[in-house]
Length: 329
Ligand code: UFG
Image (cartoon, rainbow, N blue to C red; front, side, top):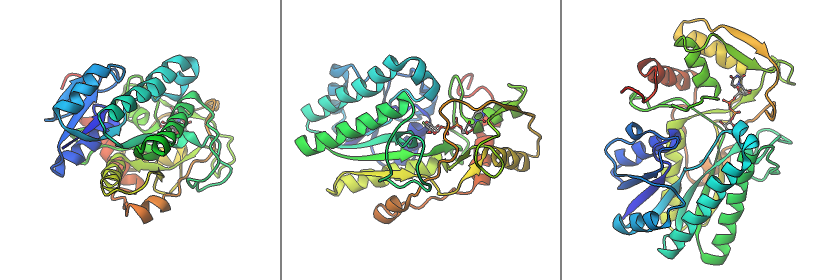
């Protein structure tokens, strides 16, 4: 029996594949490499194909004796999702519907789904618990929330069991320095700061200094990618033991402002980061902090890298050793 990891060549997917392999689990990666990187996968079978390709999906499930799926494959850029919603509804929603159809045809009924804090939108209260209202403010978040609804309907009607993991701000890189974050274009705060340190950008633009926070910049809950990866393994084990479907938040419960992140990077790396103050970025909530009590209680999830210094030092280790990401390795 093996685990199919869709999007396993991407950032969070590849870290999850590594943790699964390190625990001796049989893994097959399914990725169209539109965003992912072959070199991120390591010594694991990689099927290069699209989620819409039912024949390849079905054959992969048969050939490798797949009994559960971890589903990362998706488009995930908030800004792009507003400009090109069709791409997001097709890739994320239709792609998942197709995956689920093939899974049900092949009687595979366990799935761990990559969801997001963006399903909540502008929170009414922090820390955010799983029961907080869900009003996504962008198309990306809406696609993920739609898929959560689809999973819930398929559970009721067909007995599909799922764990939806709502990530807050994934950050950092594997402590080995072997794999890390490589998006093109890059839109996330910490890798952009790394690009400034590497001289690939002149400065960091801080988006908004007039938020209702102590220093005026947005507050986020940064969670180490390996801690996220561990939660997927716990979720797989939860489902394999016959437990019911669940949705969990994944964050550390600590908020850091953009300015605090900049200060921490300067302290950890001993380098100065040129910044400019810019206008707010559309759709950014002021504060996003998770309550992850539910996943701690039920799955016994325990983050190992929950301090910002470690998150940043692992990111810096990856970026300084791979200034061009996976390219040219
Ligand atoms: N930021 C800057 N300058 C930059 C980039 C980001 O000031 O150049 C700020 C943003 O405005 C935000 C914070 O840094 O306040 C974090 O921004 P990121 O883009 O790194 O992350 P987001 O919080 O926007 O996005 C994360 C996930 C998304 C998810 C979203 C939910 O990466 O996948 O949370 O709101 F959709």
